[in-house]
Picture 1 (cartoon, rainbow, N blue to C red):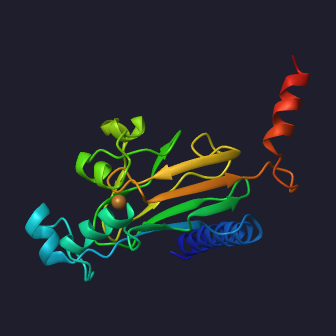
Picture 2: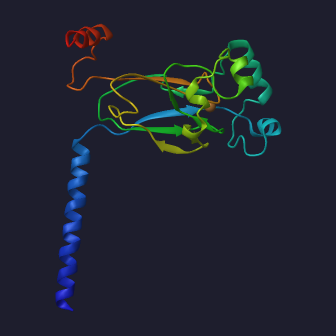
Length: 202
Ligand SMILES: [Cu+2]
């Protein structure tokens, strides 16, 4: 009994030491997750009457009619937006994508901004041609209202050094541009510098 107790104590002490070390490593390493938030202001009764039950949850105040009206006037609905719009990250920085709205959104990487997969919203918002990535349904990640998803880490293949563009494939005016700086702490290399050094290797 006594021996067993001793063994357990050793195991727990080792476990605690490892936990402490990883805490310390975490604290000394890169900054915390960079959060990208997607917002909307859908008013549930009017949105669900048009789009079906559950399309909008929460307590937004913009009715479906007001949403369409603003979109027609400005090709944008201001409360349906990503924050921040633009961001600079260092290699190694993890990201997190948070849906703070009442509707489903996507945070889809595209080569160039374009329309989403809802033809009506594409038309009214002036994005008639869908971004091809938004038609690749197998790969689109839908982020439900209130959900937080792990995003790509800066410098990984999904968020490489340079400029990456992300948009909602439902509301194509919801867009974010992320620039990942060259590792090494210096200022991001300008596109011209990148090109000339690549050229020098030929
Ligand atoms: Cu959206």
